Image 1 (spheres, one colour):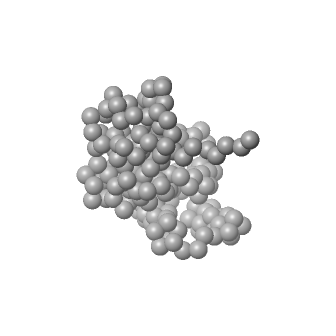
Image 2 (cartoon, rainbow, N blue to C red):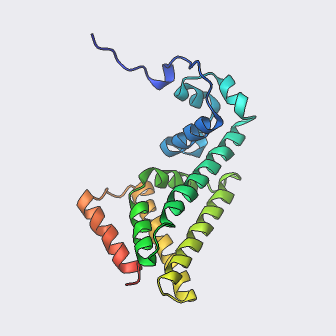
Image 3 (cartoon, rainbow, N blue to C red):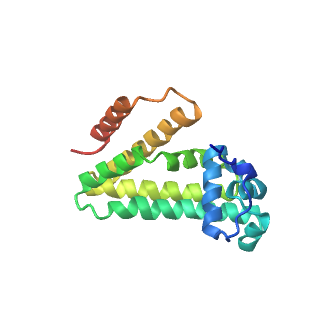
Amino acid sequence: MTTTPTPAASRPARSGRLSAEDWAQAALDLIADQGVLAVAVEPLARRLGVTKGSFYWHFPSREALLVAALERWEKVEQEDVFGQLEAIPDSGQRLRALFDLVAHEARSHIIYSELLKALDHPAVKPVIERVSARRLDYLTASFRQAGLNRNAARHRARLTYAAYVGFLQLSLQLHQPRLQHDEFEAYVEHVMATLIPS
């Protein structure tokens, strides 16, 4: 006898209590799937298989949850991405590792792209500004360590970040045809060879 999995929308309520982090992660997943405007208490509760009471145990409002979700996204990027790169002593290898890591971290890109669409939201704009400034500063410092002077490093950082955002726009918002695996890997290699000082 086979059974059909119960859809998330009709899943029975959990007996265990969710943490604030669980709610924040669920909100991020919903942002990735449907955008910032989709974040709401009832659909998230259904998705998690809990009652709304679980939500109000941790958050006073939907806006508070959105802020927590954005803080989680920002913190995870800072610790997971920048944190693991700091162990690489060679600046050129660190840049290659950064480019490779960014190229293959699809979920974070989808969230970032959805946040860019919601820049007029008061909770989203300061997070995007902080994240973008930190990324540009990191790239500038990395290019400086790789031997470029201050102005050249700043320009290369902007060019790199513009290439990243532009690729997201093409892929996720303008829905250009998805590159096949080998073609995408060749593109990433080309970007690294073009932008990372030899």
